Image (tube, rainbow over all chains, first blue to last red; front, side):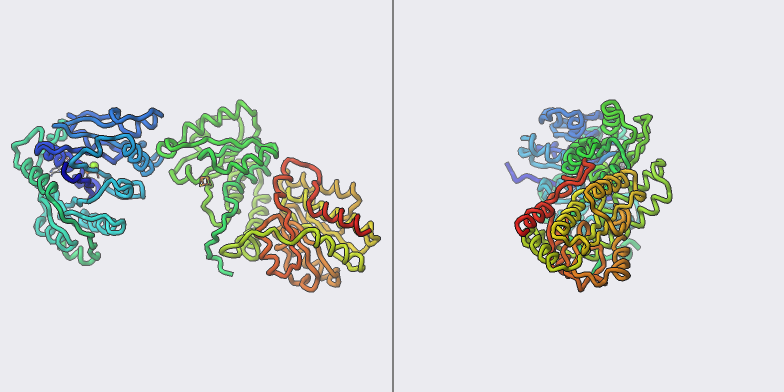
Amino acid sequence: MSIQKRIAIYGKGGIGKSSTASNVAAACADEGYTVMIIGCDPKSDSSITLLGGKRIPTILDLLHEEKDVKEEDVVFTGYNGVKCVEVGGPEPGIGCAGRGIIVAIQTLKKISKTLNEMDLIIYDVPGDIVCGGFVAPIRKGLVKEAYVLTSGEYMPLYAANNICRGLAKINTPLSGIICNSRSVSHEKEIVTKFASEIGTDLMAFIPKEQIVQDCERDGFSVMEKAPDSSIAQVYRDLAKAIMQRDTSVMPVALDDEHLRELTR
Amino acid sequence: MDKNITIIHPRPSSIVASLYTLRDLNVDVAVLHGPPGCSFKHARLLEEDGIHVVTTALDETGFVFGGHDALVNVLHKVNEMFKPKLIGVVGTCASMIIGEEMHEPVMEADLDVPVIEVEVHAGYRNNTKGVIIALESALDVGVIDKTEFERQRALLEEATNVELRHGAASREYLAPSRGDVKYKVAQRIIELLKEGKRGLVIMNAKKETGYMFADITVAINEVAEQLGKADNIVNMANIDEKLGLPRVRHHAECIANDLKEKGVVINENIGGLDEYPIAGNTVDQLIKDKYSNFDFAVISGVPHAIPMDHISNMELISVTNGPRQVLPLKEMGHEHVIVEIDLHPKTLGVNHIVESEFGATLREVAKESL
Ligand SMILES: Nc1ncnc2c1ncn2[C@@H]1O[C@H](COP(=O)(O)OP(=O)(O)OP(=O)(O)O)[C@@H](O)[C@H]1O
Ligand code: SF4
Ligand SMILES: [Mg+2]
C-alpha cells in the first residue's frame, strides 16, 4: 500500500468544499484508489451525492441514542466503493457542534479499521473554523495536509488567507490552492498569484457550471451522472494531481492591504 | 496591590457561591445543570444544611446535544420527591459554554413552585459574582426586595475588596499553612490574662461559621473568669439578629441565645452575620473611641477585614478557617495566627455553638495552669 493521504479541504462557507470533495473522492475511486470521505459538518451533506441522494445515520446520531457504535453502523459504501462517514451534530443553535466533532472523531478512530486501509481520506469541514472542535481532525492527527478552496472574489480570498494563517498557527502544511470559479474577471490570474504569494501552487481551476448543481439536485456527483462532461475531466485531473502531490508548505498569510491590491 | 494579577491557587467557584446563596434564600432544592461531578463536595455538605442538591448529570451526549430534556425531567422528579416550596436552578461551565437556556425548560416543566434561575459558571474572577447573579434572580422572582438586594450588593462589593486587599485574592499564589501551634498560643493568652493585660475578643464571622468562632469567645471568657480577670475582657461580635436574609438572622439569634446562656456578654454588637466585610470599620471606630489602650486582641472569623489603624500596637491573635489566610495575616502584623481547619463542614446543619479546637485547647491549658 502506498502512503496514505489524509487531506482536509477548507474554504469560505458555501464556496463549494463539499461538492469538490465528493467529486474528487469519486474521481479517485474511478482511478482505482480506495477513498473515504468524512463529513465533519452538522449539516451532514458531504457524502449525499455519493449515495444517490440518501442520508446515512451519523456517528453522533448513534451516540445520541446511546448505542454502542460499530464500524458497520456508520461507515457506508457509496459510489464506486467510496466509504462515506458523516459526523453529524446537534440542530443549529443547540448544544455544541465543536465538541460533537471531537467526540465523533475519537469514536471513529477507535472503531474503524477501514480508516487505516484507505489510500485517501478526505475531511470535508464546515466553512468557518469557529472553535477548537472544528480543527479536531487536525489536532488529533487525522489530517496531514490541507487544501484551500477559493474563488477570485475578495471575500473568499480573504477567508482563504485567514485559513492559511490559522493553518500555520496549528502547524498544518498547505498542499495547494484550488480555485472554484465564480466567473469573475481575471479570476485565474488572481488566484494563481495568491497561491504563489502564499507559497504554494494553484492545483486546479474548476469552472462554474450548471451541471454541478443539476447533478447535486438529483443526488449524484458529476463523476457519476455526467462523466463525459468537461468539468468531470477537471475533477479527474485534480484528483490525479492531489494523489501525486508530494510537496507542501507552511503558508505565510498576506497582509490585508496586499490582499486587497491583489483583487483590484 | 495589582487587581489584574492571575491568581493560580484554586478558590471556591461562583457556582458554589450561588449554591450557598440559594441556601440562605431557603430554597428546598437546588438543581445543578451540568456534569455529574460538578461541585459535588459542597453539594454534599449542603445536604447537611437541609437543602437537597441534585444534578442533571450532563454527559458527553448532553454537551453535544444540549440538556433541555434532562433539566425538565429533573425538575419534575424533584418536585415529586421533595415537594419543595422554592427551587433553584444553577448553571455550570459546561451548560453555559454550550449556550443552554434554563428559562425555557423551567417554563416547560410548569411547576407550581417559584424557581430561581442562576445563569452562572465557574469562570468569574471573583466568586461573589455567583452570589450577585443568584440574588438578582431572586429579586426577579420576588423572593427578596430591592432594599435587601442593594444592601447585599454593597456588602459583596466590600467582601471582594477585602479579599483583594488582604485575602485569598491578594496574591498570585498563597501557600496554605496550618498556622501557629494552638497549644502555644493558648499558653500565651493565659499568660497575658494572668499579667492583668486587657484584651478585646472580636468575632467577625461569616454567616454560619459563627457557630464555631463564637466558641473561641466563650472559651476566652471562661478562662478569664477562672483567672478572676473577667473585667479585663471586652467582647465584640457581629450577631445583630435584625440584619440579613432570614436564615442568616436565624443563625445570629441562635448564637446570641447560646452566648447569653453561657453567661457571655457581648459588649459591642458590631453588625449582622453577613456584615463581616464592613463590620471592621465599626470595630476600628469603637477601638479608636473607647479601647485604644487595650493590650491584646483575639480576632476570629474574617480577621483580615479589621483595619490595622488602631490595633497595630496591640498583640494580635487571629483565628481563621482559611489555610491560605495565614500568610496575609502575618504580613498585616498579626503575631499569632491559628487555623480552625475544616471548620465550615462542622457548622452546617447546626443551631448551637460547636466546640472549636482552639477553644478546647485553651480550656485544657487553663486547667493545667490553674
Ligand atoms: N463549480 C461549480 N459550479 C457550479 N456550482 C457549484 C460549483 N461548485 C459548487 N457549486 C454549488 O455551490 C453550492 C455550495 O456548494 P457546497 O455545498 O459544496 O459548498 P461548501 O463550501 O461545502 O458549503 P458549506 O461551507 O456550507 O459546507 C452547491 O449548490 C453546489 O452545487
Ligand atoms: S469545570 Fe465547571 S462545570 Fe466542570 S466541574 Fe468544574 S465547575 Fe463544574
Ligand atoms: Mg460543505
